[in-house]
Image (cartoon, rainbow, N blue to C red; front, side, top):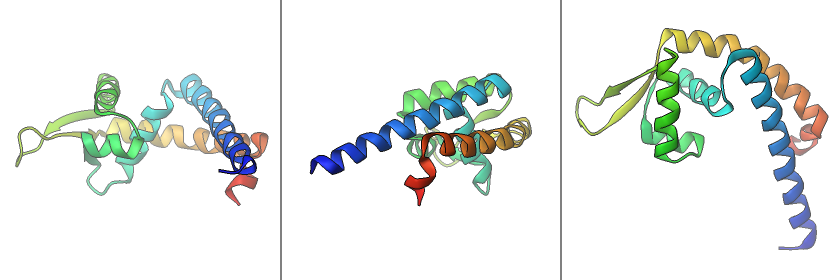
Length: 130
């Protein structure tokens, strides 16, 4: 890899980290949600059935199964998700979005989008996105 590509990659990583830190602050302060929790609610809200196998959710979030299990447990305590056993395969567990979870996601989304726009401008992310 050339030095120019290596520097560009580092800038991209630092930009993404800075933007995610801003998003995390806003979501935690205004909605009591971590960034991964918000993203889990968003992913579940976008599925047709509002549910995903835990392994699929982990893959979407880029997290390991253990981290997703703990996160879904936190969301469950808040009433935002429930866990359900797959009727065909009793070993399969689904994360299911509740109506409270959908409402929390819908409430947080405008703040997330506003914070994302501001952070993209602040950290030069708009140029990286094209």
